[in-house]
Length: 158
Image 1 (cartoon, rainbow, N blue to C red):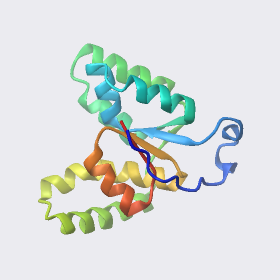
Image 2: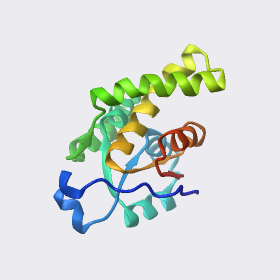
Image 3: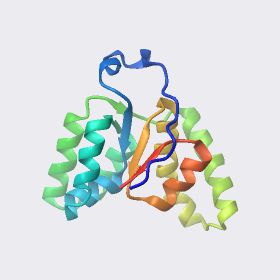
Image 4: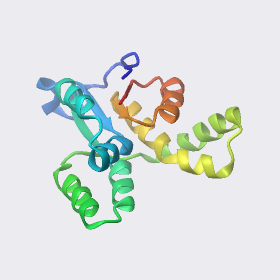
């Protein structure tokens, strides 16, 4: 696991209940899938639970629902959605910035259209984390290392 330099937290005025509980984290889809399907990341999840208040990304919830092909997967995704009382969604500005970010990173790395399309949700998750000053917890090291550098967001690698 690696933990990148902390990014300053936004004002706690957005969510007053946070004041007593600590910094925020967003779990990426890769962590949920690895844990649910292969029982991976138990130590990571324990560490995250101790150090952060987890907030749910609407992008991650959508990815989980889209990929839920079995009855058990649908049950898990539906259960998570039900308990995700606070969901963070990309803003219009996040969508606009994602276009620039994907273009610039894609050009730097010679990505084709398919890779750029695949990177879009990760960019939206990263931009949402940036807006709230949250850490992204992910097993998708390659994409989120790029986003950590570009957005100066903290990333906890599972």
